[in-house]
Amino acid sequence: MTSLAVIGGKWKPAILYFLQQHGVLRFGELRKVVPGITQKMLSQQLKELETDGIIVRRVYAEIPPRVEYRLSTLGESLRPMLDAMASWGMDYLRRG
Amino acid sequence: MTSLAVIGGKWKPAILYFLQQHGVLRFGELRKVVPGITQKMLSQQLKELETDGIIVRRVYAEIPPRVEYRLSTLGESLRPMLDAMASWGMDYLRRG
DNA sequence: CGGCATCCGGGACGATACTG
DNA sequence: CAGTATCGTCCCGGATGCCG
Figure 1: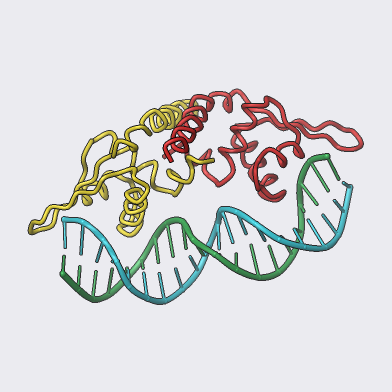
Figure 2 (figure 1 turned 90 degrees about the vertical axis):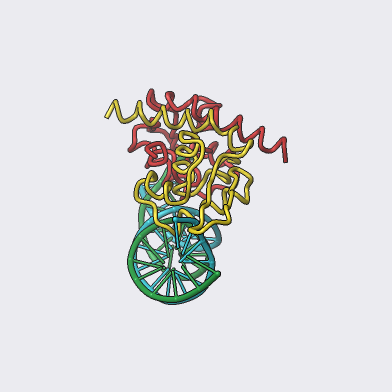
């Protein structure tokens, strides 16, 4: 499956889901909203997503540093898929 | 992400996709249509899917043995998600 | 035909410490 | 604040062989 090559990985769907919900998030914010993720995994998966052109990383030359992440155009095209996954997840939990 | 607990695993989306395409498939048929899967993984992932109530396994007491797999009602509810994943995959390949 | 048992290697993932 | 570096573990997945 092609999709898995991109959204595969334990945390990517969660990261993308929260990014599409909030629009723009900083590194520290992502750490808070994605439940249980470690610094390392967040950093790693973000880098992969950026390499695949799914998200855009923007660095501000400030002290303290600020880095923002948002979905790219290609990332936005994932929205129907992410919505479908999320809504199915809700249904599944409701059934028990 | 809840969905990943169920469709996570390298092969599950592919297996489910082909099952929803063909309706009913035998073990050997799945082995042919799922590209590159090994016996072990196919057997293992099918068992997990059955445990999670996503697919139904039907055994015929014949010689030679015959085992058929199909989506359960719960499995059918995955259809929108699988379709979304598949169509995004197509789009992605078309862009290059 | 449709599996299960076993062994094994690599990579995913986590915890911790350190840095610009 | 936003990462990198390092080390260790776990288990996913492949290869092979056997069984009803």
